[in-house]
Image (cartoon, rainbow, N blue to C red):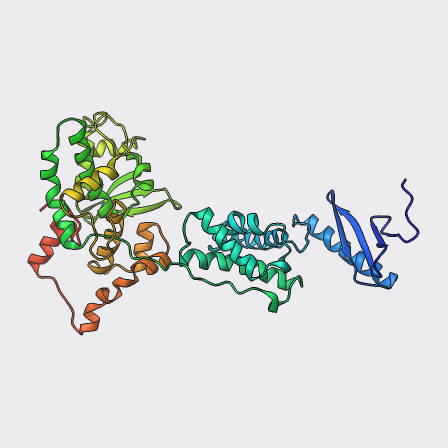
Length: 420
């Protein structure tokens, strides 16, 4: 056994050592927790007082280790892990806010990698500025205001933890600014441009060369119509869509189509507008592997085959380019309200716009249909509020005539439908 110096004292059967450094009047303490050596200053010059502090600190660390909490120093990483553990505990108990998942992700992806070993008391204004520059390089652009709000809230959770545990005083907590770009309006199609697009698609298909080129155009037409009539996400949800995810059912003599969608977010169901079944039937009729099976019988088989595919069953990655070529040819590429190029994702935004303005759909129902949050709907479509409430603002109610109702119904509800 190694002999102890005369200035070293032990507690709790040797688990804790209390000692003095040569140039210090205050007693230090050291002990081992889960193979990790912890060294602390008791802050006391009187031995018995130092022993009391050392004993209390040892028991505190043992408690943390027993409950799978990190062995705490005042380093940012350790405090952040405490905050994460607390948020995760609440999430596991279904008592935490859903946004805690985003806070945890932000801390693990950005804050801990940058601030990790830095003592939380050493993070000042300049260190925050250095972090902002580093984060911009990692992301590749300036974060948007919504991202900064999430990140700042995540960082504040760490500081709340530090203040609560006495690691830092509230007055030393740095102010986190939000100078990010606000939620930008997204390009969509006006009702007039949408009608122009669906009128031009059939003729454009006929102008195409035979073979795969024309097959691509046929596929694009139905892809456009289905996305615009469901609000599904182009790319993720559309690419994952299989025939087994499509269900047709009847209610009160009316036929409905339901899609089970999964991609960017957790899975959700979406109902297609009137006419969507017809677009699915066209896709079915062009797919060699299933076209000879009656449509409704095919749906009942719940086949694990892609809905959006070429006749030979292959899935293409070139719809974006084909769509851009079509929009360019027909002077529809630029959204006049945003100045940005329209893309396939603009069809999803068009669905949301028409649902809010023309259908009067409430944002709670729209958020559920589109598999997104109410907050996201509010941020990106708040500019529609005056048009949504135009009748209230003008003091009148607008009722459709029989002719107008029939015209909208033929177009798929609120002006989002098939060719005229």
